[in-house]
Each structure stands twice: as C-alpha cells, then as structure tokens.
Length: 100
Image (cartoon, rainbow, N blue to C red; front, side):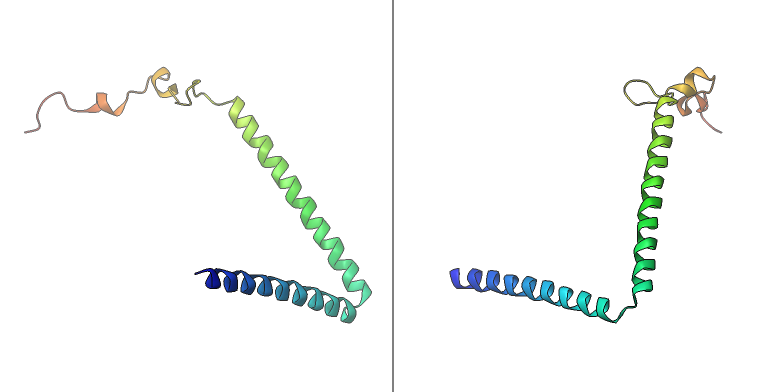
C-alpha cells in the first residue's frame, strides 16, 4: 500500500512539473513568434475586459444593495406585503362548501 501511495505522489509531482514546464515553453515560443504590436494590442484588450468586468460587478452590487433597501420583506426575510395590499392568501380562495 505504501508503494502505491509513493508512486501515486511521484506521478502527480512529475505530471505537475511537466505541465508547468510545457506551459512556460509554449508561452516563450508564442512570445518569440508574435509581433510586438499584436502583443501590445492583446494586453490592452485584456485589461479593457478586466475593467469592464469590474464595472459590471460594481453595478450588480449597487443594484443588489438598492433592491435590499427597497425590499418589503420583514426582518425574517418573508414578504408579507400581499396581506397589506388587500390580496388574500390561497387558503381563503377555497370553496366554502363541497362541489356538486
């Protein structure tokens, strides 16, 4: 059992090391063959995407906070506004007598 665990860990380590080595080598090769203007443009686009994502997160949080302040729910999180607005619950809509 110890041998299996030992070789499992060794295989995992070799796999991770090989993966990291291959990623570094591939990244260097891409940088070597990619023209400078394309690299710059890609960096600018990626930073613009990150900025748009941060802006989207900020707006969603603002909407969430606005909805939380306008929430008619009580302190326990249940919405009892339907009772205050004159609507009846489903229980009160049942027929009074048996259907014939």
